[in-house]
Image (cartoon, rainbow, N blue to C red; front, side, top):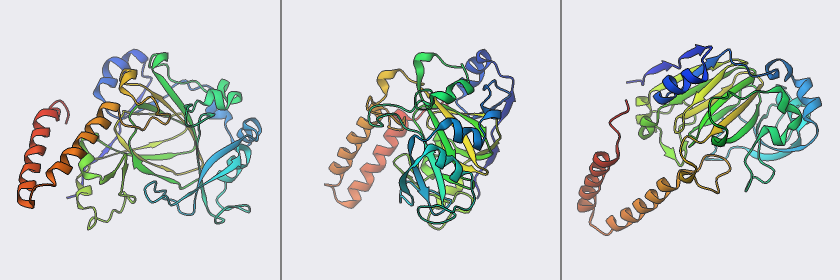
Length: 315
């Protein structure tokens, strides 16, 4: 049986107070309309970004196919001047290219030293800072990063989750976003933070039979829309047009919960990483038993985890 298809709610004119008191505690995706985002939605044309963004070198993903897969790495990393990237990403066919004339481009902005610095559009692209206003819904000390993203038309990003809350600000173009609840993780065939199911619209159910049970939440974003993506919610994004957006990530948990070496916002909280290491050791210990006993005690462990760790406060 096919999983549920649900529309992400859309609300206009939501205040910071209403969002934090009534909407944020629900921990569900939400599209916010009519927010004051500054002049970016009108100013950030291809010509404007080309002129103002300048010729600083940026590291980009280049893919020969529209569906990018971070598990198989079906793309290459290349470097381009920012103005050249914008021009190429806006094209359907390219006179200059790395792989093929219809290759796709994706920019996920980085800090000055990606190993130490988080992405912040205000620092890496200071001439654009005055054009965009971030939603002032969280405390400044909770701010983690602001990631500048540029995508070719038709590009699809793999399904993944992040460990921090974020606002996806759609500045230019249209995007389709499909989300899955953290409670449906067991249906998504995970490899780390990513789903192995690349084609979510026409999945291979012989290979991924449980995927049909995952509840699918969907929305379309146009310029000026802001999508709230709670931490741990899986999301898959298609740029239906040349797309420009900014993700603003902030810390939902106290700072000490997060890995201090994480500059991307996608490393599991330190306690979760420690628990996973302990589980790996437990499984190696179980492997010392014959299959019949290993199976029995593994099932008991699963039941024990469900009893002690599963929340009864979520759908």
